Image 1 (tube, rainbow, N blue to C red):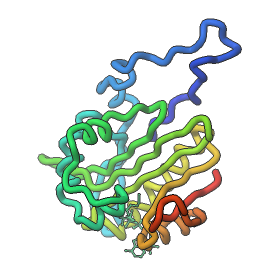
Image 2: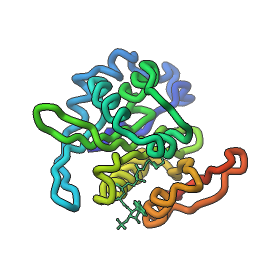
Image 3: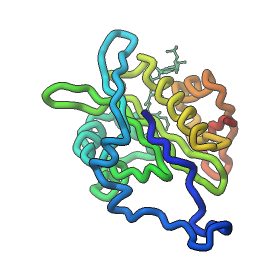
Length: 205
Ligand SMILES: CC(C)(COP(=O)(O)OP(=O)(O)OC[C@H]1O[C@@H](n2cnc3c(N)ncnc32)[C@H](O)[C@@H]1OP(=O)(O)O)[C@@H](O)C(=O)NCCC(=O)NCCS
């Protein structure tokens, strides 16, 4: 279900005299196209609560905002690596408008008359380095249910499909839950000297 476009071609493809031009942004971010390309999958927490797993869509901005407002200061600091009181409109737009050629963004959504988003997992691809940076957030009322591990495995699978060689992310040194989760999935930890109080978790693919 993960958006996994064909491996990106170089804009300056030497073997193609006409070159390759990416489609215009209006097509890449077309809401209907994104919806069609990202079917919804049903998943269940360990304690039996149903959720829908799918790629983030532009129309999810409001769900993202409501989810952010429910997060504790600790959850925000661990996810964004610093304190943040509000999610600015610019950032909200950035988080809900995903370029599938360079990003994967998965959401877990509780259905019903008023859907709510409870978890997000993202990668941002660096094609030159054949690697991707991850981020992950599972709201505390939905934590310890196996969702974070499942989402991280999806990011690994998606990165492999993209032909990448490494998945990595910055994590605060005090973030034991994320370090344990990643260690179970084969990630290695090293200090990030240029980012005090931070480690880099990385996994060769
Ligand atoms: C870290 C986080 C993603 C974990 O998500 P989760 O859905 O609770 O993770 P899972 O239920 O899949 O747990 C997987 C493993 O991680 C470890 N783990 C998760 N939460 C833990 C906790 N509070 N204490 C210790 N270990 C923990 C355990 O080893 C767990 O395996 P187990 O349940 O079999 O014991 C979630 O707590 C979170 O979103 N935190 C805030 C944001 C953040 O830290 N993001 C990471 C930086 S981008």
